[in-house]
Length: 65
Image (cartoon, rainbow, N blue to C red; front, side):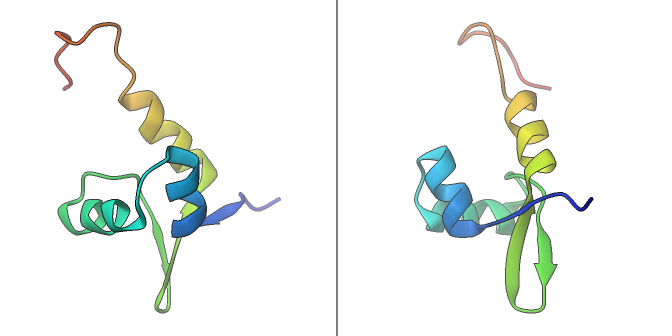
């Protein structure tokens, strides 16, 4: 069964961010991994989950690798 693919609008809504933020992250490579389908961009839900997990910290002084 294929993983579900989410649109930029769906991911922005999920993360409570503006779509422009996700676009900027795609340019800088700091956001979640994405799939380019022609001119469309989609996100695997598993990649989004992994990206969120990689940013989970216990305190504000914790340094991300």
